[in-house]
Length: 344
Image 1 (spheres, one colour):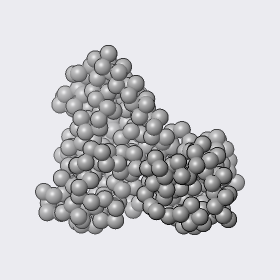
Image 2 (image 1 turned 30 degrees about the horizontal axis):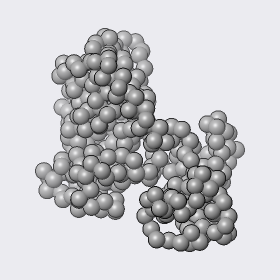
Image 3 (image 1 turned 45 degrees about the horizontal axis):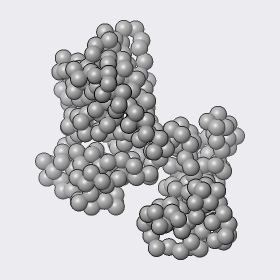
Image 4 (image 1 turned 60 degrees about the vertical axis):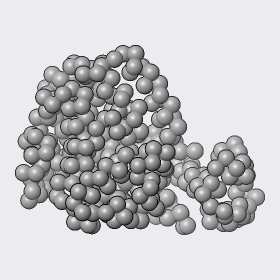
């Protein structure tokens, strides 16, 4: 199964709250839900269905559709401003009940895999500032325009979340962006309400470190403890992870009919094969283990969502025959393909 901590691009484990917010935002601009959902394999009935599950890839696809539809330049900021903590379920409520904002920051990073993550987040305290940094997870899988859209949205979300937790006076000092200054830079400062700098080494949002010991408005030790237990169970269920192994997994999932060789993956990631092997070893895995993870995830999806025979699934996943596939599947999951199909 996927390694602990891996953020799986195509794994459908997230409620559709981000997609719903995106649909609602651009509807006000005359862009229909059908346009937003094009190529996502979602229909409008799923957008507000609390039982529907979506993937990070589907959300990125929806964002790309919005960009292609010539949405307003402020759309990403609008979406971020609407993404209140209450939309995130147990994760959001746990954040609101944090005992201090330092605790809020730590919890936000640790449990971020529950939040349909499109960027990696981290924070540090440095030179009198509490600094959020946002770095790429899926750099090779999207256009630069989509990347900038997601960075804008993430910045606006963080401002909104700190307002939700600590009140409207909790404002950032400055925001740093790694890309060149756009023509509409005034838009950035209007939505983030702080100085915005471009062509910087990283994407960062700076707050005064004095806020770290401040208690959120809804701080509650008992409620937070109970919600954290729930988040622990959810994050275990998600089986998510990051790092080089996560990106290799995602690249393989993009071509499920013909898995790339290790050499081809290394070339796509601009590594030598030796460097890729070393990086995977440092994360406690290797190409073969990740290939098994991909095959396992796809096999489960085929078994539960299609009527393909075991023999057809075996062939699709590159096995010489159904017997070898069934043996491997039992090793991966502890169950037979028939059991998984019946559970679905």
